[in-house]
Amino acid sequence: MADESFRDPQLAALYDPLDPDRRDLEAYLHLTAELGARRVLDIGCGTGVLALLLADRGIEVVGVDPARASLAVAKAKPGGDRVRWICGDATALPPLGADLATMTANVAQAIVDPQAWRQTLKGAREALRPGGHLVFETRDPSRRAWEEWNREASYSVTEVPGAGSVESWFDLIDVDGPLVTFRSTYVFTANGQVLTSDSTLRFRDRQEVEADLLAHGYVVKEVRDAPDRPGRELVFLALRPAP
View 1: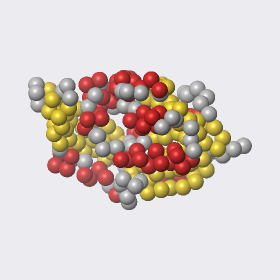
View 2 (view 1 turned 180 degrees about the vertical axis):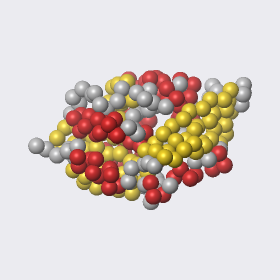
View 3 (view 1 turned 135 degrees about the vertical axis):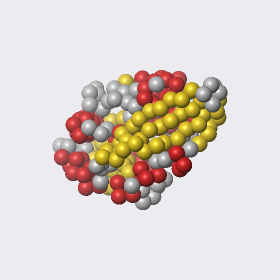
């Protein structure tokens, strides 16, 4: 299930204005070209930023996400009709024969339930053609990124078209083993409205992720450093081998 920040239409509309710097997606664009992928499945596509960038390059894209509000934002963007949007998750997809499946940003970590994670890896594999690839990123738990998730480090004020000035910040709520919960707070200064959304991420180390991929029939081709956060995140490139 998607967090409130993605399910609520008012909050979903804030996602892009509050996070306009998407240099993290450049690695996925380069990898798509590197692999010669012509059909891409974007799992957890959210407001469709990557999906639309790929579609602009002539790639056939399927974007899947459980949050209808986020998909509504994606569909309304210029070029939204060039992407096939599916409201759901990767566990029950039609046969796609995709060359590449992606999970950008927090998508992989947001799948916190172990069974759901296994089903996602299985569903992604079935959506890929033999010889297709799965690529996703995850934070290195040894870097303890959650220690920076506080108001002092994350507070910002953003002018949002149609909403006015919006204050936002994160607060760490709980750390329970690999599970880290934090709260996002949004204050609409025009009317004083305050909205919050709680999120939980699972921090998996490299060995755990590689073991999960191998257990679900992938070959781990490479583990790269995330170019936008060097030393802090890992990018996994896995292959669905041909029979």
